Image 1: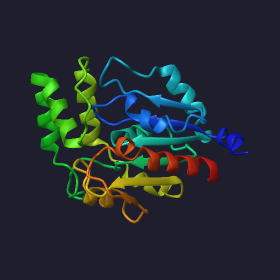
Image 2: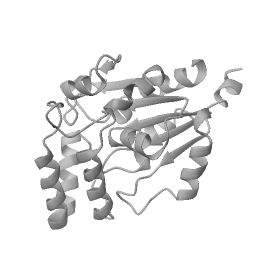
Image 3: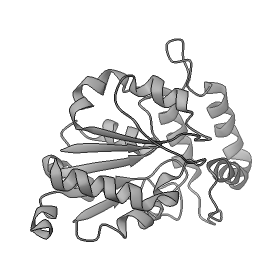
Image 4: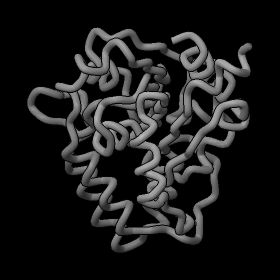
Length: 225
């Protein structure tokens, strides 16, 4: 019966800044009984999800659980109307950049500096970011600087905090309690009073460090919601 129920919902995964769809393999490998797509935002390895696939995802939204890591969650909110059956935000936020009414955000000057440094030495910028995330991944040889800078612009200007009431009854948040990229204060400031599932973890990489927990959460949503 569970096998039949699992077919009711598609799963859509979107990775964060500086990674690729391969980021999700530890989680998707545990959810093979679900139909799924992993969107690639084109930051590395010359992979980029086609517009045809994006269109298919748009048409299936009401039968889909959408999972976004970090920037990937913002992408889901920006790219698609808010019609997914359920959303899972992992190590994520509704706004990243600091402003007057969002003091816990990251100062815009940091994003601006990263964007300038990409033009000088993109490998160094990505290496420093991977280290900050606590990622052991090696730096890929193929890096799309233009897409990385576009991603930084996303992080600098996008703000979906006003959309929270539209999502509140179909949103699950999983956060590291000691995330080196997205502070606990930013998570709380972003999602306000919405429940947050805090995980004891020192990385920005819960899908890699805690794949069983992430997969179990997603499975439970897809089978019971």
